[in-house]
Image 1 (cartoon, rainbow, N blue to C red):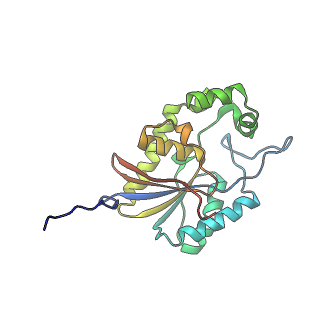
Image 2 (image 1 turned 30 degrees about the horizontal axis):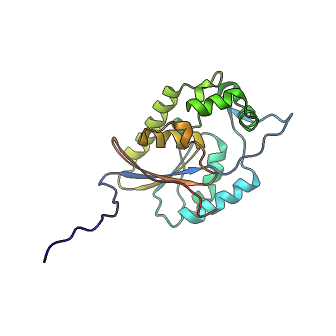
Image 3 (image 1 turned 120 degrees about the vertical axis):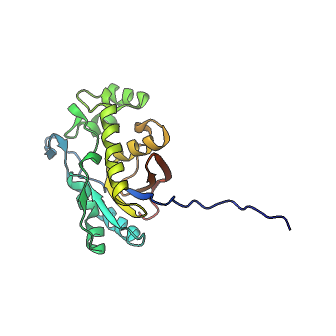
Length: 217
């Protein structure tokens, strides 16, 4: 009888880390005349009540995923999103500064949302070129890519053969997946709040397993 070779199910290679990249829950809206909190010049709003509910739904999903560690960024919306999962699993969240959102220069403090919604010419150029740094004073594409790679590599090196919840930002997710695929980061930066994207990392072997999973929301 001839042997047969069935299609293979993906299995992470030995030593790889599986990173569950969670975009934080929806943050508080920007209101005219109301300053947006800043941390080191970066917008640092808290979660909106909608975002709090999304955080609970993320917890319900990931509590079944055998998560070994939890990471957040210095911005409070990531820690607040991770909080229900932290409480459920009893894991101490670790802060990875290099995975903080891209710095938007003159458009921090709420202007980014306003200008994108109003189709500001620079926002249109950003979409067309696939670069954040067309925004005045914004972080260079090269610097952002370098630090996101460093943050991902540190987490992966520390968690071989483990699953890690990494609560970050839309721009950070886009950059991480762009590093894995060669796509333009801005094209992948629009993951929904509370969504989960899966990235398997082993040295230079990065595999995108899913993007913008919102089935739990």
